[in-house]
Image 1: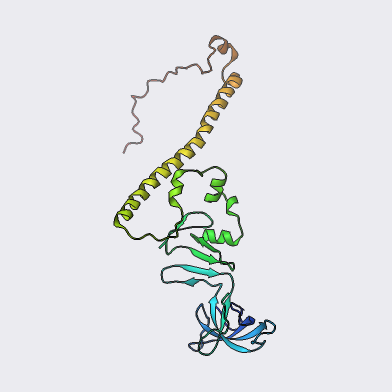
Image 2 (image 1 turned 90 degrees about the vertical axis):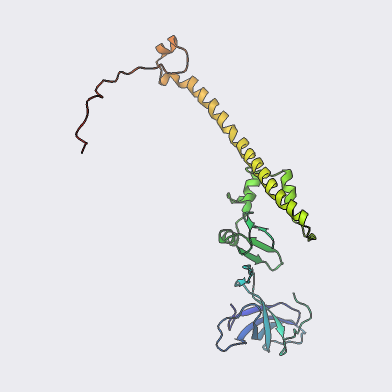
Length: 99
Length: 168
């Protein structure tokens, strides 16, 4: 259940450390984003000497949420934090390793 | 499809039940119901919570060492499907389950038996020491057994008189 102003950890080595969600991509006026949705985010914290800088607007895909993910086979999975992987316009990840 | 064990209470989690919690160090905790999940969130140690299997095994309430437990180990290698093997396994599961539950019942029975003998010993001791409370010492001198004498009470023969008050 990620919405605007939500801070997310970054789960790859693209250089960003923390993102803040600005907008959810998809239908207009969508309230919450879940695992697998693409969001527009601003970088709040970045690792030093990285290609990405603080206050850069980028896209990311959500990979972990504290809100439970319900699967069709009835399995319910909950993670410990909210995390996203930085992505470019086409959908390819910017980092090389997923953590 | 796999039947998992609840991390908190050690009961089996069937598919479609319970919640899985994935911690950031990639350890997966499976819970059978929200009771176990909530206890986990409260950071309770299952070894200290009385109704869990972990507590019962640790404190000797339930059987820990038995050969029937060897059959239920976690196997990560998928077996090639063999109809005979599958049939035999299903039969064996039923039988092993019966044997194990019998042994567990015996274990608990053995644990409970100690109380009965202890109660008898204590009752005998109490009778010896406190018989003077119910049996006067003069009667005790005549009849030294620890039982009370049988007293016969005459009942008046008024049962033939019928009571018509309650009849309609």
